[in-house]
Image 1 (spheres, rainbow, N blue to C red):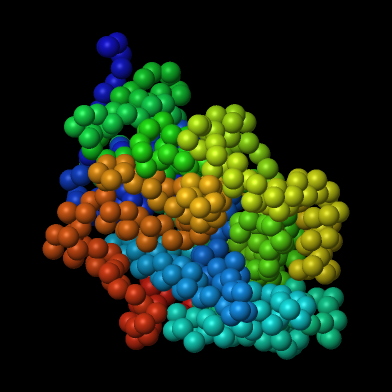
Image 2: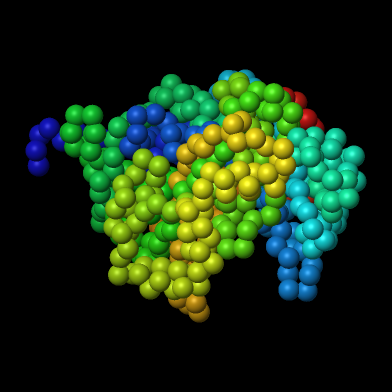
Length: 498
């Protein structure tokens, strides 16, 4: 073996410097301060892909406004289960972020989170009826008790004056309003967490380092071959536990790990674009995240919304996203990503999922063919008075939707996030997209429970988890007093509306 190969040993290797790795790294370091962690990132900065502020909606996804989390069942009733689960998960994130702020592990919350009301907005008899049923299904739950519903023109005008400009008073419109919604700069939060981690003993963060191979050894530990993209040198890292949180790059790395649990998984990439407002007067008129209904066949990440954003201290206004198709798995990826990901074990699931998702294919083709006039037409459904000169097109992030093997259907396309871990708990991989970053803390806490099963049962780890996340191990929707207490505390710490 050549002498110039660098070797290192650690207890944990995190691949990808996004919100998931940052969250897991901080949790593990808090639970076990002497744990040795190595982090490898292909790019030259943290949070440059899916976690970057311009590559995601910045919505603190709490299911307050996202209609795709409350499907209408065959009998016409609304299923609130997924929305409640996501709302619970976001409360967990708020608790953890509050802990980091209180302990001075990240800077002021002003840097990464702001209060922005969350709204759902629809038009037409059928959609108005749906939204009313959705409101009734959610509002009875304590976690959604602050939500209000209205079809009154003047009330809607008060909530979203820019959206109501130019509309007729007799239009059939409805909206729900949640005053405790948030806008989150996940890129800033991620970089703050890595800045904290880098200062700790036993944590090494390597940028411009690309993982080339992963192999499990006979003793269940892992050998990882990494290339330094700056000087071309090779590194070999030996570790007990590997987490792959590389966004769209996770699937190819899972395939390289060659574990049974990874067989049959494929990925379907979807790219995105935003219309970004360039007129400060227009930007100033809107203060909300207003979500509508997705087109037939559209993936959840393509639900149209007109968003107030606060990025690096500046208020912005975005509309979209407009979906597209690229064979890249990452914004900075290769056009060969998709073809190279197709293997014998996932070919049938991918073909099966593709056959059953022809409307999605049709939708993406239509999106790719859109002209600037088509995009402005879509915008004017939300902002009737929008002028083309006030908006410009910006490239957004790249997402890979999960395709997994299914015994009955052959293969299914999943739109959520999915964590895969080996039976021995030595490797875990996060695949998928929304609600992703907003629920990172719940996802990583669950991962720790699965992959560090013995340690999490110890009094020390359990007590620390409750310190970081006071509601750890319980649910809030069925405990209104505890929910109110925790919301009040996190709102004060994070400087949010309660």
